[in-house]
Length: 216
Image (cartoon, rainbow, N blue to C red; front, top):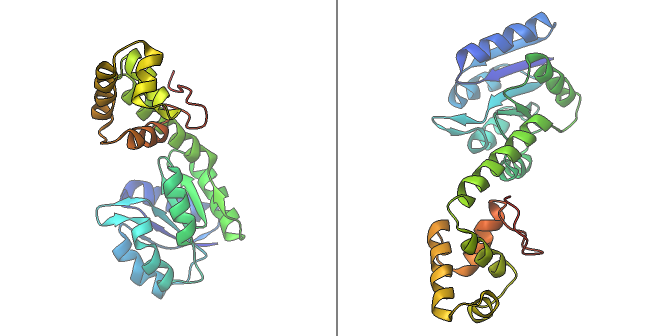
């Protein structure tokens, strides 16, 4: 397997290069930016290019069209500390063939690279779990700023209740209900009830199907 490594963390990149070489593979080059990867990909054939997700000059996905044009036969694996669903979808659409978790042992990354080189599309489950944990953490941070009353308001909004219905169900005046709703919008940083429900669902606070509170 011929591999090109592109990561701005030089110690990590160089260490992985040694692991690959010791395992009998050929490291066609190690670079520290997507800009430097372009001429290397054109000049040296590689089965796989392992590239970090984040760089000062943009993400690997931003660079993917140029990188793939430079080396159409090379399979690209993106290295990340956590994997958001949006990044996964955008990466697959851009032609990424694998996602590896940066916290994994070098041997595990090597196994993933072999599978990608063999033609598989592989997503490291550790990266998925890290992404899920990060989303749960974000949900908990948002949830802690909502009072129990505001949480109830948010779940009722998710069920599609109007302010009038919400006021009746909660035993408060419409004015008080509107005040609760406005407080929820302010804390979520949105401008409408619909945006509040979307934002709450995105953070995993409520279920849009049942209106159930999910954040614990």
